[in-house]
Amino acid sequence: MNKLTSAAIDLLRDLISIPSFSQEENKTADRIGEWFDQYGISYQRVGNNIWARNEAYDPKKPTLLLNSHHDTVQPNSAYTNDPFEPKIEDGKLYGLGSNDAGGALVSLIALFTHYYAFKNPKYNLLMVASAEEEIAGNQSLRGLLTKLPKIDVAIVGEPTEMHLAVAEKGLLVFDVVIRGTPGHAAHPNDDNPIMKLPKVLEWFQNFSLEKQSKFLGDVKITVTQVNAGKEHNVVPASVHLVVDVRVNDQYSNQELAQILIESAPCEMTPRSLYLNSSSIGMEHELVQAGIALGRKTYGSPTLSDQAALKCPSLKLGPGLSTRSHSANEFIFVHEIEEAVKIYIELLGKIL
Image 1 (cartoon, rainbow, N blue to C red):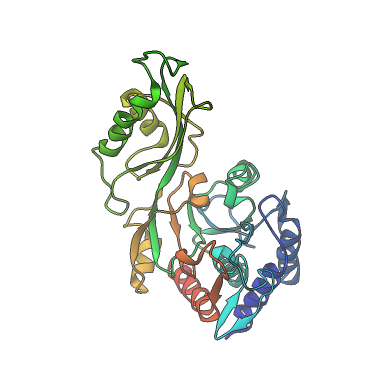
Image 2 (spheres, rainbow, N blue to C red; image 1 turned 90 degrees about the vertical axis):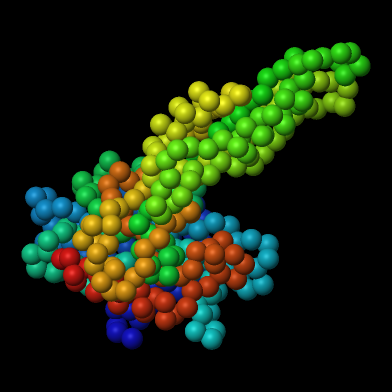
C-alpha cells in the first residue's frame, strides 16, 4: 500500500469517528480541510462544502469534477457496533458512512492529491467534498454549483464496486389527490373518493411510457402512501396519495411531470423537478478509458449528487451499494486500495 492510499484510509477512519449527519458536517469539513493544508493545496469552503482546483488550472480547458459527500444518514436501530468506531476486522473497515460514501470520498481526494501538481493536463481537476447529499439539501452540491467554475464532465463517487454507472435514474415525488363529496356515512353517496381509489391504483399499475433506456429500462411508478378519512361515520372529501417516480434518461423531470399531470385520473402535484436523471455517452473518453481497464458499464437506480449536474457524469466508487444505510456498515480496506489505483490509472489515460 502506498503512502497516499494509507493516508486516505486514515482520513476515512477519522471521518467515521466524527458524527456528520446531514446539515451537521462542520467537523468533518474541518478534517477534510486539514488534509488539503497538509498537502499544500489551496481550497475554499462554502458552508460545509470543501472544494479545490488543480495547481495548473486553466479556464480555457474543460473541467472534470471529482465529487463525493461527507454527510451520513442517522444510524439505524439494528447496529450492534458503535457506528462511530472505525475498527478494522477481517479486512473490513466498519463505521457509519464507511461505504456510503466515505470510501469513494477519500479515494477521490487521494486521486486529486496525486494529480494536483500534474503539468499541462488535458482537463482541469475540480475536487468537491459536498455536504447534505443524503437529504438533497439546499447547501449540497446543488446549492454550491453557482459558486464553482464551469463543469464539463464529472465523476461522482458512490459505491459501484468500481464499475461504471453510465446512467442514473432521476426522481419525481408527487402529492396526489382524489376528490369526492363529503357526507354522513348513513346517507347515500355516489361520489365517495375512497371508492374511486381502486380505479386510480389500477391506472398507476398499468400506465406505461414509450421511451425505454438501454441502461435504466422503463420509468418506474410506485404508489407509496395512501391516506383518507378521520371519522368512522364521515365520508371524506378527498383521498391523498404519494407517488414515487424513478425517471430514466429518456425524459426530463419537467417533460414527464407534464405527461402524468395531463394523463392521470386524479390531481398530481410534483414536490420538485430538480432531481433529474443523469448519463454519459458510451463514446466519451472517460467511459472508454474505464472499459479499457476492464470495468463494466451499467445503469444505477439510486440517486446521488449527479441529479444536480447538467453535464455528462459518471458514477464510480469503491464499495457495494446494498451496504449503504445498513446496520454495521463497512467497506473492505482492499476496496479502497483498488479504487485509488483504478482512479489514478483512469485519469492517467485522459489527462
